[in-house]
Structures are given as structure tokens and as C-alpha cells.
Amino acid sequence: MSLSQRADALESKMARDLDYIVIKSRLYSMADGDMSPPPNAGALMKENPKARVLMGDDPRLPAMPEKPSLMDFFRLRFGPCMHLLQSARHAVKAGLPENMVLACLLHDISTIGFIRGDHGYWGAQLVEPYVDEEVTWAIRAHQVLRFYPDESVGYEYPQAYITAFGPDYHPDPYVEEDYKRMRAHKWYMSGRQITVHDIYSFDPNLHVELDEFTDVIGRNFRQPEQGLGFDNSPVAHMWRAMIRPAKYL
Image (tube, rainbow, N blue to C red; front, side, top):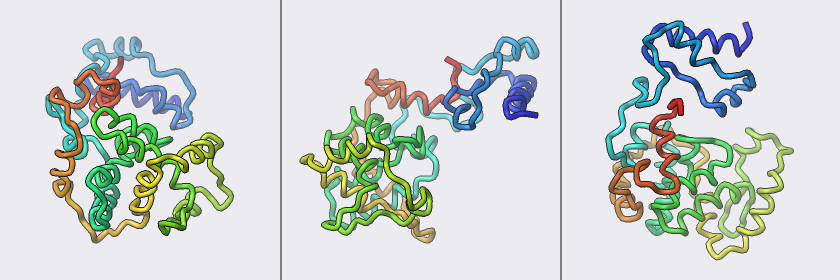
């Protein structure tokens, strides 16, 4: 049975067993190397006339509050975040200003909650309406700067990257071009500080609580009164996509 056939069989079983039907977005399927057409929702509903495509909250996921905050996303949607908590703690110990501590805390939220590829660009866009411009710039820049050493601050190309990408890996041309621009920017060092405090070797014995950064978030993240995803901001739909990742339309 092919990958596509197995997926169709799973979708059919779910439609028979549940009163809702989940149709994955195209991006999910392509990440599995699956270029086949999506399951036919109409056909699945014929097999189970009581079933409907999922248009509301996904009962398989933790329920989100009516007006979700950043802390709610950390607790109810983001994947394991100890890396970010350790990075932010590292920044605090180094005496970085609070806005840069926040940047370290948020720099990989796209990786743990949204999209991995180009995660710095996506992550910066997610928080842009809610943080200072320098924080947004730094989060976007860390995506690029992490590939380039800077002896002035003791940053070396991570050994973890050599292991993961291979010794012959070279960043894409658009990354090279962005690096040239970012290296000359007035906030270059803000982006560079994220790479300096980006902990690549996690300490499994060091546990950092999210509550440690409640005040930093409160003073530096402009939480919308309506809740993230419902404030009519240019990125509200991105937060809603994390609330309801399997919504049909």
C-alpha cells in the first residue's frame, strides 16, 4: 500500500469512528513527500453521513481560552520549549536588557509552534505587532547570523550544524545577501546576541519555568485585549492557524 493509500485509509477510518473529518493542509502532506490529491471530503461524508469536516476547535488538542495570551500558546500549543527558556535565562545572567531577553525567549517560536523552514522570518512576523521593532529585527536576523561566526563576541559556527547539515553545507544565496545587509545594520549586535545566547547543548538537568519571565513578557509584549488571533492584526490569522491547525477552510 502506498503512502497516499495509507493516508486515505486512515482518513476513512477517522471518518467512520468520529463525527468530524480532518483534511490536512497541503503543506503537511508535502512535508511527508506526498504529492497525491487530498482525501475527498464528500466521499468520506458519504461513508459516514453524520460526520462533518472540522471547522471549529479540534477535540484532539488542549482547549484554548477565549482570549489566548502568549503564555497560553507556550503552555497549550508550542512544543517543548526548554531551549528557549534556557536561552532567555542565559541572557538574563549576561545582563542583557529586557527586550533582548524577550527576543531570546521568542526567537524559535515558529520552530516549536508553526513552521521550521525560515523560522526566524516567520517568528519575527508572528510577533511584529506586539514587540519593539528592534526585537522583531533581532529575531529575523538570528535566522541568518547563526550561520556566520563573529570572533568579536566569541561566536563560532556551531558544531551541531556540522553534524546536522554536513561539513560542505553552504547557506542559500538569499541568506548570503541578507547577511551582508544585516552585518551593516545598526541593530546587528541585537541579532547577534540571540546567536550568542542560543543554547545548542541543552542541559537536561537545568529546568527553567516559564513563570520566571512573566514580568518580562508583561512589560515588553503588547498582549492584545481580544486575544492573540482575534485582534484583527496583520498576523492574527497565523495565530489562529496554531489554535486550529486542522480547520478545513
